[in-house]
Image (tube, rainbow, N blue to C red; front, side):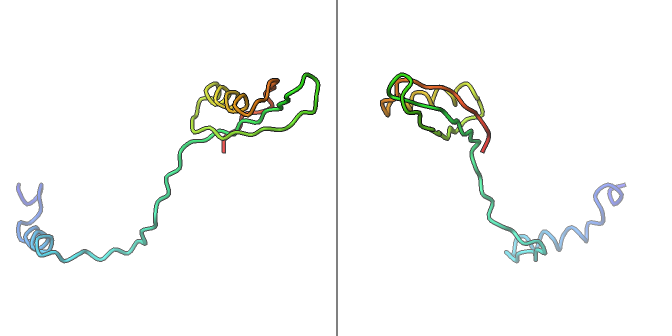
Length: 94
């Protein structure tokens, strides 16, 4: 019964000895460096400092998945640059 559930006890002993002796197991797969990236949204706004004046395209990358939060962050960043009139163009994932 024990052999059916856990295998032969003689086969388990060499693998335990190999792990204790510090001999690494050979791996066939190549381990690459995993790059973690945070979710980002790119918000594009048309901004102007003067009413019906020259419009500029202002883009802002937000580190969030919420489109509403990304839009609010982009609007506050545009206001910090002294833009008074702001119109949302698009919110798209990067």
